[in-house]
Length: 82
Image (tube, one colour):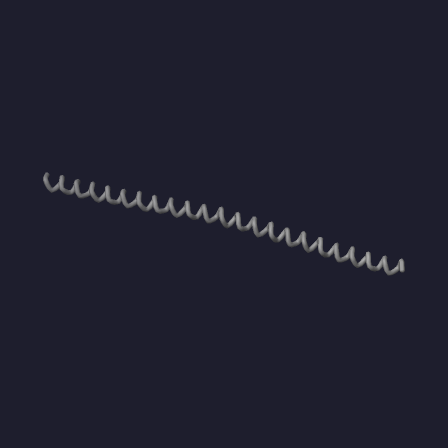
């Protein structure tokens, strides 16, 4: 009878330790997932920023090309007038 109680106590301690370890693993996993979520948000924000930089560069290039084209057309028109 005493051996049985001792075995039940040992089993209970092992179960409690396994549950404690499981909870610790779960807590660490949740922390890692939170870090991952923050990193994902930062990556997405960086992607939006880079896209805006690219769009601005394309817009600037477009304006420069049109400005150069307009300047060239204006120069040709002035030459014709002379």
